[in-house]
Length: 471
Image (spheres, helix red, strand yellow):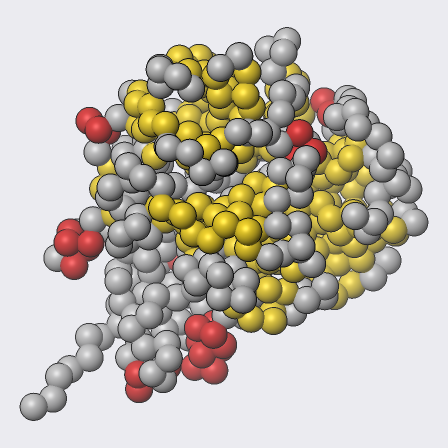
């Protein structure tokens, strides 16, 4: 008796998905270019590389496409030295992407379809396995350059962005990590977490500054069902995890329903995981969704957590969603949570000076919508710079530029968060021209002091890092 392999779902209608068009549309060529044109004054102190990862489907997706959770990874890099710039972009070539390139078409279905190709198409090692998607972030730690996925093993890249292979840290992190690890600037230790569909549903681990795992995956007690968590925060004492009520529902997915279920009646839980290995401290508050945290720190028996709050995970769960920059004060003894709104409006991708992770700080930079233009979800036309002490916001209107996540590049030899630059990629919605922007941290509302012309379009993406040459 023979069994029939399920048929692959049809390709999606690209014209019906805004995040596959315009400034989001994928690029397929890998480019290398030296001596890029520069407008303005490119600071001589900027000596290093800015890398940014993002979803870039190599072939038309099958069945479904959920931005920003899927799409092949593509890392864009701009190297700066002596006021000169060079550029390169490369796909993160996972084993699955290599097979699709051989076939000349997509072989795996979108995340919401559950379709995986059979052994006849991709061989026994990949058959029945979900596609690796290291398309969210790119970081450097312990001598490794890592392209990070949502909750999977990262892929190691060479300095020239060629894919070297899956990274399990000598087998110590077999399930991998999520795309938002945090590095403690005091110790150089990287803290990571990972969620899974089976118990233990949530684990955390640590990696020393030399790249050696110092704490193997440790279950977070009290995490009793599979839940999606995109980001984390870190203080000197705690790993901070926000568990919004977005659950994985395999039974529903197998019967044709959604893989993810939003259950706001459960509220949102916050786990404070002591970094010394002590018992987890749980808090509970009204339901909200969080894609990204800005920072957290310890203060007078509390954890202060700054993050972008949404009423629901838009793009995944149908219905409108409103966002705001918020602050939660969590009493580490009683678990009481007090929340306040710092700034309102549509904003995302909060970043700080990474040298202040886990400590009190003043500046948050975010992408934002001015409300002056009709933009798709994930497209932003401004950068916001928020002062946590004064409560004041400065905004730079990017006009026709679809602007990406701002990352802080400090002036070498200084510790002042105003001594440096915010850097980002941006693409003109009209003509497709892409730029690397350099804004002064002391007066970001002035706009860029330098713009570097990129020789190819850089699609809107997700997260990246500024990596100084001397570090």
